[in-house]
Picture 1 (tube, rainbow, N blue to C red):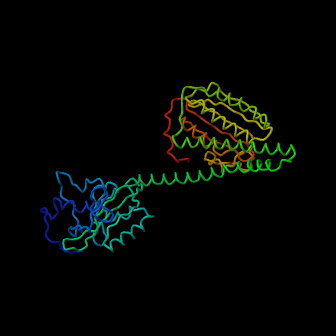
Picture 2 (spheres, rainbow, N blue to C red):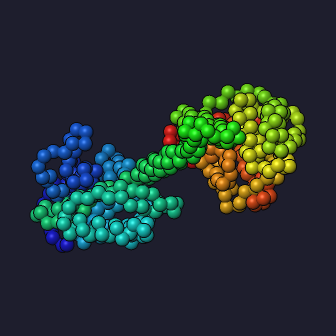
Length: 423
């Protein structure tokens, strides 16, 4: 467009000064509808006056030795009536690392967003309408950042459409926060669905057996004993699940409270082995205590016993009669820990990564498959101690090894997980 603008107040180079100098870039930071702001997120009634500028956009003169447009904390830009970029400020140039915006602008936009950018820009240019949209633009270090673009039309002094003026604001942090919130909502929904299913699993046989015993007083004594055994086993599993659910709920609400003090892991291993010797004997499984002592560390003895007890309980659950479980204390140069090694059912390689997720159950067909929360709780406790936990297996039927390591030096307790986060 080659229209000659009417004479306007300005400096000796024809550039606007004073209030007029800031009118065009300031308009870019108004509302998405192009109306000037008033108070907190309120707009004046009526149609806004057009931004009147020369047909070729000039940045404002320097005020107090500072170029107001170049020093703006947001990226400012302007286009002509055909959509060609005619001006960008220093903030844009520093963000992209480019000085020729006319050739570099489209190259900086993410390829997946380019089609939408072209469509939005063309549609609003044809309608001469303000717009607000978001897309990704490549920063000079190669990283793509989400930018909120706000733009409004500008006009020459004779009222002729002269293009758009706008600003770009980095909103990547907001996008990442929104994605974390969406993931938390998805995880919470999955958790509730899984919890509902798992609660019904032991409840159904419990109710069936109680109903049978109530309605069949003529059952033989052996059938009564069998029914009561099933009901008791189901009630115990239900109690375990509710206990774990309450523990997980506490973890998600306020994080895990750790009362760390100098302690020795070795006596904790000894006590856990003694506590599970009788259940192991009933199952026909042998428990063997091996490894180094002492194992000095900073930790919460009750929580450490919970972790080891959970691992040994799982090993007993999935080891067949005649099998052996080894609880081995480990001392390394900068860590102490425990390996719980069994020769039981083993774990398929593609399931190892899911073991520590809530309600993950590798052997769902087992009569006593647990709540699916024990390993998740173990992982939370171990991480709260600054440690690591991992699982290893050569495959189904080849046993499994769970390795836990804690630092021997004092550690910084990690921040509690955000409410609703279960991953």
